[in-house]
Image (cartoon, rainbow, N blue to C red; front, side, top):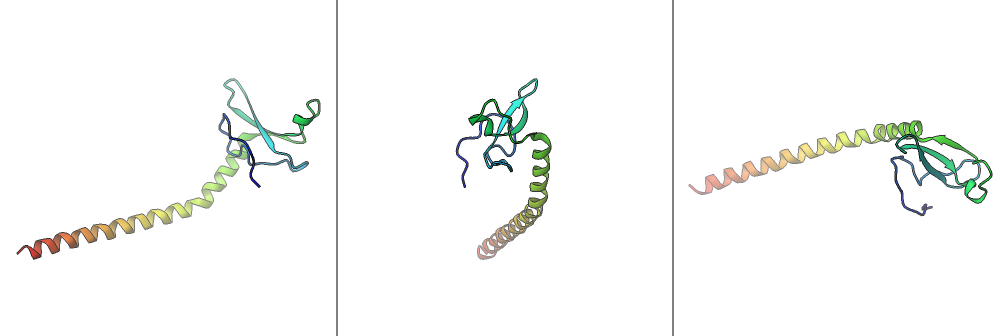
Amino acid sequence: MMVRGPVRKGETLLAGLLRCGHCGRRLLVGYNGAKGDVGRYKCDATRSNPDGDPCISFGALRVDEAVGAEIVRLLQPLGVEAAIQALAQREHQSGEKQRQIAYSNDSGR
């Protein structure tokens, strides 16, 4: 299911991707702090009931760090494999160029 709406200001990693585990509504992201850059996820239930409390609300920093670390852990082997493949391809291309140069030098004689 696609979540509608663009990601707006801020640097939270999971903005627009999370849902409340209690009621299923989207988790909104609010920013506060001296520079307005400290993210906090909160249940969207307060939109329909402004006087009510959100089902859940939590700071974004630790969650974003944990998810980011897990993404890096899972993708790191793929990055290493891609680098190895790129090096092998470059060596192959270099070998082809050397063969072409050698062929050009031999046929010119």
